[in-house]
Amino acid sequence: QVQLVESGGGLVQPGGSLRLSCAASGLTLDYYVIGWFRQAPGKEREGVSYISSSDGSRTYYTDSVKGRFTISRDNAKKTVYLQMNNLKPEDTALYYCVADRNLWRLWYRQSADFWGQGTQVTVSS
Image 1: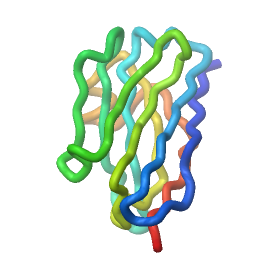
Image 2: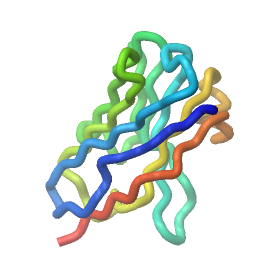
Image 3: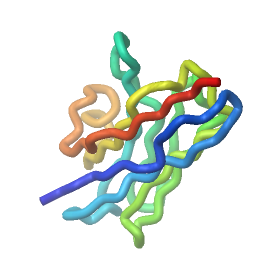
């Protein structure tokens, strides 16, 4: 069956960096748009970034992370990465990796076919 497994979360001081990984199995990653969502306690889930299928030539970032986060994909390794730099306390959340063939369903409807279990990111001094 399809599995998305996130890793790389942890506790980091403000201004620090983390690289999240999303390892996929049971699917051909090339065909899927991959996104990262996050949810902080007491807040609604929000989309952080996505990368288009195949060569990943198209990426998108929510305004609050532009210039700080970079999404990339390695289809051969079936892994998508989210490099997070200059982290802020407001980035603290549970980060989810999601996969779907349809961008609309993944990003705008937040109803992707496949979701990971999430990895916790905590930014605190």
